[in-house]
Length: 472
Ligand code: SAM
Image (tube, rainbow, N blue to C red):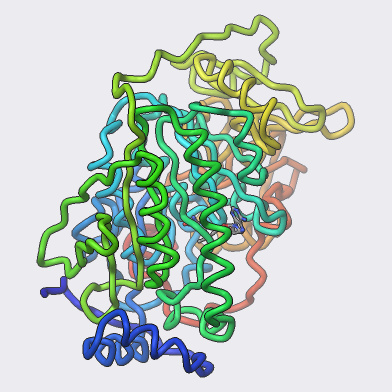
């Protein structure tokens, strides 16, 4: 089996020992090949990013063959000290999980305006990918049950900047109220994490046969609820970062007992991805000794029924749209949802869907956070600066060089001569956030939880730092 352009970089951390039963599990799964896999787990991980082409064209770097916007980097740079990361121009993501793109291509609703759900979404790697793969008119609900992880999910999605994206914080059982609702559901399930053993020492520490069983139970419940909420003819994509059959093929086989059919996901043999047919299922497995990425499993399933294009979204005009909608691109029709401290903007043709969702799920963010109320003031929301739907010429632009941009991202004020009103801070022409004029300085409106805290980069700067901003 081939593998593509192996380039392994970065220092392996001090890895804790793995539970002895893991080795038996691997041997039962792979026989003599288990040794090669165990060896690969002691080598450094490849470093990769996925580019947000709605904002940035990306660096000159080796492509990831199964993902049009994926790039391998030659080394692990200091991403934190790159303003483009904070501007949502790319997401640091391991390569195997970008196979989502191939699953999406195989699944059917490619290019149509659909309703999609990412049930286990934080921190947002696959949600941002899914968002880039879906048509702009599609609605994407990013759900995360864990309260502690919901903040980072919102941050990453705000930075990615796409509209028609809802963030919710529900348990999968709340999907009971949304039968046959979604055309596409991604369940990137919590799992025993074997595929992350070389990247995350904690994954090694926590592994046990009991954890595998516990994860299998959680996965079964999440899948049953997701299946109920998938419309007939719709597609469910299931993925994990483990090799355990109980967490992978056994879950797929359970859905097949309920009438699901597996969809083949085409792969090129040179990628090193294994098309696996265990337990009568069809899915893809990634092993680090064969593929240039981490351990991963992915399968796509179709629910029996009508495969016609989903009904057109219902337009829901709202005559009380807030005046702040003029901060958004005028070529789309917007409604506003006033939640007191924050006013959100949603496209008119998805407003009815969002109403329905809000009755069933704990919606944290129904759309683009447009404005926030501070006393009697109405200010543009930090997420609006990062939205691809921001109408840029509404606000004066202050272009920052690299040093000033990093100071801005640390929360510092920017020296000025005659700073007044609200301005948009940009780096390399890409919007970062808001500035508030105070005469001899611009006050900083970058959100406190998003600030850079480190003083110095602990690794080389990203390679494009030396080419992207000549003024730095
Ligand atoms: N899709 C994410 C990405 O690509 O960035 C990673 C998701 S992670 C593998 C699984 C997520 O499921 C975690 O964020 C976890 O909090 C969430 N989770 C934990 N228990 C869950 C449950 N019972 N039902 C649904 N999701 C759960």
